Length: 467
Image (tube, rainbow, N blue to C red):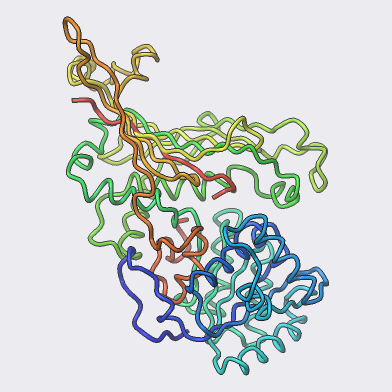
């Protein structure tokens, strides 16, 4: 894939449509839930914001048989329901005109319809530059990759593969080997879209751009860290996918552990994707394997009655647990995580909890005596909250003197929202991912597989020492 200018190296480089030449976009899974909720509204928002190239075409594909007009109506309804820009006027007419639909799926032996559509789009645009987005379940990835090789569509293409990448270590390695038999590593963008969220990337700024936080970001000053991702949504419309995935694979080992990598990593040499990835992988290597006694799994009532779910299913829709990182910085500090469907509220939260005042730490010694304090005492410690929902931002709570006799303390907090925007015109993080392919992998998470937002989002929570 070629671009008109050299791709920026920094993670925080702003996107520019001038960097992107004419492009054919192929969207597999175009009639699915991810495309409806995120990708189609995101593409239209990028068009309205002027962040797509001047010349582009969208070839939408899924197993469903639809006409171009039927797909365009699905796209219009998706943008109207989930997008921020109204699908109307000349802008929508121009967007819809660029969209064509090819049904019947895509796999070895049935690639001809997509081949013809891509050839026609390339002829109209005068280019062979392509972006291929795989918004499909993991079991479909191998057929798409083989089909790209059979149809000779790999050359000049960038391929985005959504999480989860395989279902376990062995399947991820096999998929990676298959990908490399058809595509060069530089063509592949394995995406966990959560790493593009503003508050997630702002963890780096909090840690490494502020002398206040990084000196106390370790086991001496942090009591525990919480990752909290409850959702009110059910899985009614994607029960078959969820039955084969579950909350642990869908949220914990993807979204939550990727954010954990940002929280736990050592300072990188720079902010390029490779340098950030190297340090996160080191944290993953130090992550203690999860054991059954550290994890609780649950399932909401009524899940087994959904279509596509086995009557005796033990797939978890709720999971909570505790992880440890066995290195100098985080030895014996628990990392708690929780996620579930059909919960009382939807939020995304990361909390860093302080270890307690200096006198308590000295008294507790190596056995961390202060952890046996009553909960109401621990809850009053200083903490740093990072929220990853639509109202993204951060909250820092500490203690100060309250006017009275003696030395009573009171809690205070300061909040900040929208701390860093990759581009103020981008309304959704997958839009950054779609746009980043024109900047040649200048985004977090684009690294070889091997180390690996639900609707509603997620959060991290940590408590810092009060001084």
